[in-house]
Length: 279
Image (cartoon, rainbow, N blue to C red; front, side, top):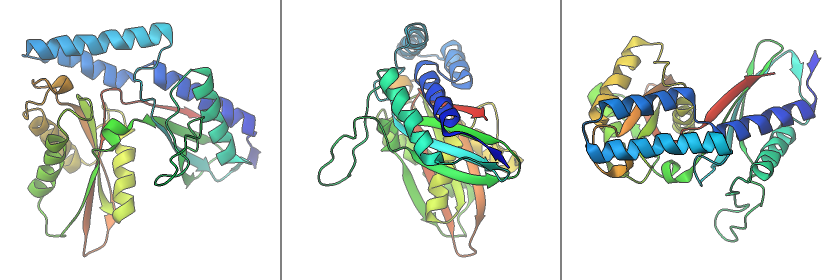
C-alpha cells in the first residue's frame, strides 16, 4: 500500500489552482484564437482580441484571468492501492493556500440562505472521489464562476424523447442564458443516470478537453450538431452578436432507468479553467 502524505496533496492542489487561474487552458486558448480568424463580425473580432490580450496579461503578470475566481471543484481518481490520510483536509488546505498566495477572490459563504458569511479562504471545496485500480492519485481541478454556473438547467425527459428534442433543450438553454455566462462558452451536457448523476456528468463534461470528442460517434455527432446550432444563435462573443457563441460542446453519458432520460446542462464561461496532475 502506497501512502501519500497530506503535504504532497496540498502542494499539488495549490500549484494547480495558481496555474489555472493565471493560465488559460491550451484547448480553450486555441479555440478562441481560431474564432478570431473565423469571425465575420467586426465587433466580435474586437472582443475576441480583448480576450486574447487578457490571457496574455494574466499569464505574464500572474493576475487572475477573471475577477470571479470561482468555487473550487475537484474530481479525484483514487487508486485502490494508495492511502492518503486526511485527503479532504489536504485538498482544502491546498485551495486555501492558493487563494491566499495568488491574491484570488474568496467567494464562498459558509451557509447559503440566512447568514451568508464569507469563509474568507474560498473553502470548502466540492470534492468528488472515484475509486480506481492502481497506486496513483489523479486530481482534476477547476474553478467554477457563478455567472455561468447560474445558467445551469436540468430536465427529466420521458424515455421516448428524440435526439432532436434533447438537442433543442441544450440549444435553448444557451439561448436563454444569452450574454450572462460571458460567451463564448463551453457547454457541458450530462445524459442519463438519475437526477444528481446527470448534473454531475454535465460538470465533468466541462472539464474535458475540447480536443477530445465523445468516444461514441453518435454522441460525438450530437456535440457537433449542438455546437453548430448554438453558433447560429447570433449571441456572439460578449453577447454583441456574431458566430462565436460557444467554443465547444462536450457530452458525458451514463446508464439510466427504463422509465427516465435525465439531461443536465452546465455552461462554462470563456475562461474555462481546469488542470490535472497525477501523484
